Amino acid sequence: MTHLVNHWIGGRTAEGASGTYGPVTDPATGAVTTKVAFASAEEVDTAVAAAKEAYLSWGRSSLAQRTAILFRFRALLDAHRDEIAALITAEHGKVHSDALGEVARGLEIVDLACGITVQLKGELSTEVATRVDVAAIRQPLGVVAGITPFNFPAMVPMWMFPIAIACGNTFVLKPSEKDPSAPTRIAELLTEAGLPDGVLNVVHGDRTAVDRLLEHPDVKAVSFVGSTPVARHIHTTAAARGKRVQALGGAKNHMLVLPDADLDAAADAAVSAAYGSAGERCMAISAVVAVGAIGDELVARIRERAEKIKIGPGADPASEMGPLITRAHRDKVASYVAGAAAEGCEVVLDGTGYTVDGHEDGHWIGISLLDQVPTTAKAYQEEIFGPVLCVLRAGTYEEGLALVNASPFGNGTAIFTRDGGAARRFQLEAEAGMVGVNVPIPVPVGYHSFGGWKDSLFGDHHVYGNDGTHFYTRGKVVTTRWPDPSEAPAGVDLGFPRNH
Image (cartoon, rainbow, N blue to C red; front, side):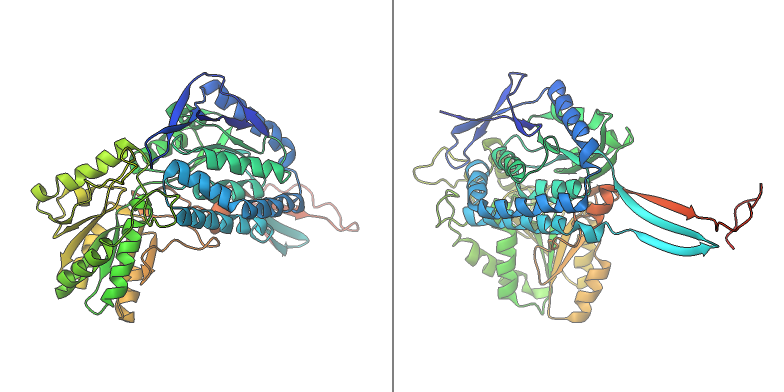
């Protein structure tokens, strides 16, 4: 018997009125375990209407009321973190410990939202002119929307809606239809925490739901995380309709390893960052650039570690890496490895034939490692989003940096070195939004903002941190003058106002 996931609108479950449902599979077995409702444009309109109605009171609610609810939500989320992680593992496939880490990262942003009072403090300048004061305040936008990917079904939505609702907005979330249970359960917990009906709504579906959110006149802003082609579509479509947009796209994150680096530390980091969550991370390291004569030794150490990775069902505590999200995605990832040798790559490890005993119908793929990868290879040029690591060679720091900066993507990058001068140069010269120094996955903590450059970001704002608060609010400046009771009227003056 399959489980049914419906929409969450106005603080309650809303059955799919369209009658259209999509399958959700267990990646470890390939079996359909869940059906998820696909929203029609009319159902999206219902969710937006619920959010618009809720905004009339939520937008005027006190910061104390909002943060009290978020504190209760945080306690519930913490208490249910194992449950949420199990839902992620069942539908995404990542191992349970990795799913727990995702929930923990989401909790960091809830922490930030609980302290939103500090971020929303205004500014006041007194006596800018005689008896004139100027105040700057920030106010919510209204109804905002989030469109989130399959690879982090809990964390990425929590990059968005806690900040948005803490700022006084109401929210419509369209999560991935591939793993919808975790975000729906999180919405239920928020309602349990006391969030008023309609402040957070969840609609499931495909492009029909997405396009309606982009077009809807009552949606004031759209946040998105996904592939670059879709991010570009989100940005151009929503911006053309006057909406604010933050659309985070794809990545091809490089790790530059200098000759003086600790090769064991670099190999550990490369394996962890490339193959964690089966490579289905926008911050995964997918290209290692070995500088100088260290390439052969570095590849040997990466191979030694990669061959020991235990691949199996995410619910098995012994597993270190799980399956890919769908059979179609597994086949696409495998195609990059199958064509690599013909494009000039040395295939050090080929994981395309991997299966798990007793789970032969799962979406399995093993570890792949490609060396001597030319920049013309498809495996290098495109975002694979799977457990395939490319190793390139460079003669100098400058050549390695040029490879990093020539990429059309600019999400994250890292350098491994003992040389502080080289590290300082790299953090200033690398054309990416997030840089790690001996840190392979430089995902910022919650009170700093996450986002890339170039084809990894469309829009002006990153997510969470100060950028998140500014994205979900708009500024207003209020100039006030209270004349002294004894002061004579100033009279008519058609000249341009001057401060004195």
